[in-house]
Image (cartoon, rainbow, N blue to C red):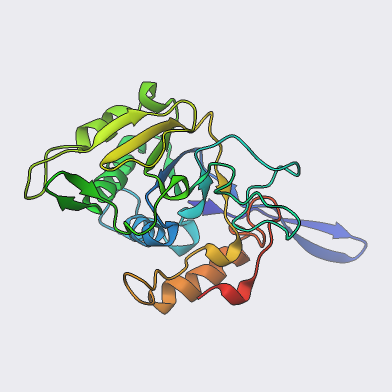
Amino acid sequence: MLKLLLLSFVIGAQTQDLFLAPVERPSTNVWFGEGCFWERQYPYTLLELDQGGPFRRDNASVTSVVGYAGSRRSIQSGQVCYKTAANVSQDYGDLDYAESVRVSLDHGREEKQFQALVEDFFKSFNATRTGFQRPDPQDKGLPYRTTVGIPGGISGSLYHVLEAANVPRGPYNLTMNLVEDAKGKGGDKFNTVFVMDSNIFPFYKAEQYHQFHSDVVRHGFYPDWYRTDLWELQISLGKIPFGGSTGCPDDRLNHY
């Protein structure tokens, strides 16, 4: 999926190689918010790497990335950060963003790939007698609300895939509530998925140390190939820059 363009040119008697930025095939970005983003980046990455599934990507082509979505606010510098500078009191939660994972869908395979993602999304919830609960119910409020961002929102071409996957399931044969959120103020409601238009609500890539991070609370440390090898590869490719999307405070030592 990922191609590097290599150009050679001659300066005097020397030949030099110029590496240009990675060139991606046409794609459609979608994002999912469901509590802590560490919890969900791992299974979406596994879906992308599944050679029997609709993505069939290699480590260099993985697109799952954690970040912040669900609002249109930012601080004066245009940043949305996990923790802002000491003299700024507007972290991502203060700006009404939710922790989210963004995945890119290949042109011509959008529906099949999105279907695999939403099926995994719905299966990740825990069934109760009155509805479905997030994997990490201790994380509450706007920063952890359940959202899905797709182009066009409920009027977009992918909404029917989300709707079709929300079938009665679990021991109590229940579904979840799919609710449009056109203002970014849907709140954090039990058994409710707020559907948002990703063309209107931007996604901000999170800081480098948050990417391919272990969810130590639920699963302990993830394997080394994920939290170390894949992380370093994605850094080397320029896909998860230090400081995230806009140069937020970052700390490689906090990654594990």
